[in-house]
Image 1 (cartoon, helix red, strand yellow):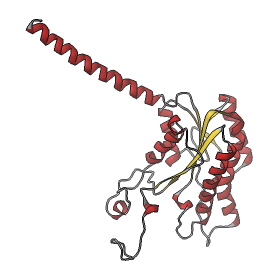
Image 2: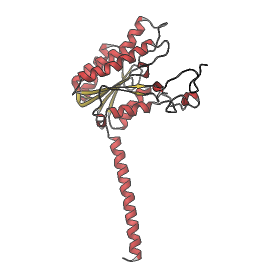
Image 3: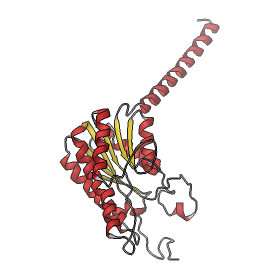
Image 4: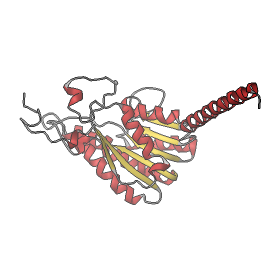
Length: 267
């Protein structure tokens, strides 16, 4: 082989390797964007915050997403504390799709405490946070596709509390317990898991100082931290996971805090 031919051969091989890398990259990116292609996804409370992020991530990955929220917008508008709203919404989805692949119960219950929370306030929190996820699952269960998945959004407050948060804390504790009950009842039909977020800043604020350093993970969370776990739990990679709760809180609930210990002190 002449020197010139050798050089051309080397250039060709180099270009071929680069081209293969580009093809692999494009193929991987395409596969990622189609990971949930044509899957029918339902997200409650999806107009803003964590729910909106979850809905967007599914849409980016090829899913057809149905949102219900009491906030006005280009989605199904309704108060999920009302039985007739849940029934009408289920008919809305099923009439268009015929089946449901993924249900994300994310809607936010109100947070009121012992001093201000009325009977009606507490009942409303339970209706949004526990009754609605139960009843929506019941309504949609006959229409779940093979390999269906449910993710319930709880909170790290299902295991720890601040004063005057009884309505919210009770609702989040309820949905965490509902998760493992549904997982057993729906065995063979759908996997059911829950996520307990800690401090999640829905404005994606980057905190510095004590707000960040108090967290073992070194930062405050954002909605993508939750959305990514939802996507994993609904994927085939999580096919052996059901009835579980996963706490995503930067390690805060695992951290022991005592006055005068490891730099912690009461102000």
